[in-house]
Image 1 (cartoon, rainbow, N blue to C red):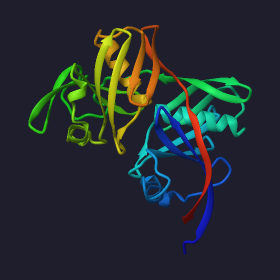
Image 2: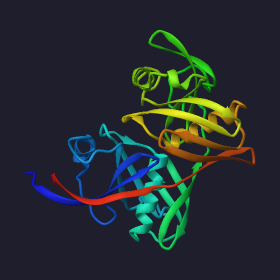
Image 3: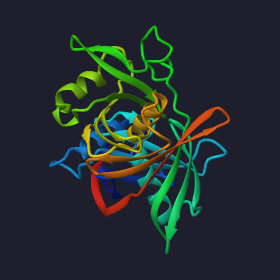
Image 4: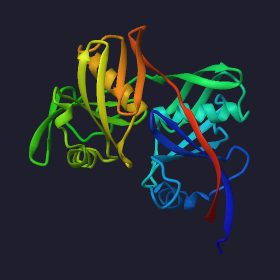
Amino acid sequence: MSERTLITFSKMQGLGNDYIVFNESEKILIPEDKKPEIVEEICRRGFSVGADGVIFVTPPSIEDADIRFRIFNSDGSEAEMCGNGIRCFVKYVYENEIVTNDEMIVETLGGIKEVDLDVEGGEVMASSVDMGVPSFKTSDIPMISDKDEFLDSDLIVDGKPIKMTLVNVGNPHAVIFTENIENIDLNEIGPMIETQQSFPQKTNVHFVNIINRNEIEMITWERGAGFTLACGTGATACVSAGFKLGKLDEEVEVHLPGGELLIIVFEMDEEVRVFMEGEAVLVFDGVMELEI
């Protein structure tokens, strides 16, 4: 039998990508079987708090991690990782004294992420996230294809070829470089690519205009959420793809509708690792009544 329960939460945003954060580090607030339904309900703008997704702070399930990051899209589906979300997450975790290290090891569905926090007077001003090693293998995206890597290649979408590069940075991304970003009808083409049959787990979609080798602008159709003002894993994916194709240098400023991120590529021992730097903001704390 369900009952009405008051639950505290925080509303946070990273470059306009906004999230509701629940602290489940000590006890479960929302039962596992009800999480998708409740997430979808509370993310509906105009009907509830509204957000691009919901973040849960949970205990780590592996010994080496300090804390575990879980994120659900606004449609109730659980995602592997989120760049803007994890910056909100570590700010929340540090400032609420759940983990008090200014260097954190965070467990995610997309793998372990190491995060360095820039702290001033007990407040997290910004953070740098080791986003790991990008994979271009179609088996890792995952993508149904006879190609080992899908680089600057045509994919048929709605009967038309679209040249794109596929990369996984903890979650899947389709990167399309274009000189006419302002002419893209993202609401039409975004969901077509997201749900294209080649992607059994769907994909995030990004259109990118290269300003110069150290600066790009991008727009995003996020898997399970739609248009978003920013996407941290997307910025990481776009710079990784541009670097792989020889279009971009190691340090790139990414302009998103919600603001800027710095993405840095390091080549170490024939391995490429990508780091993301940016800020996150607490919007407000609140209490909501849920039927659980």
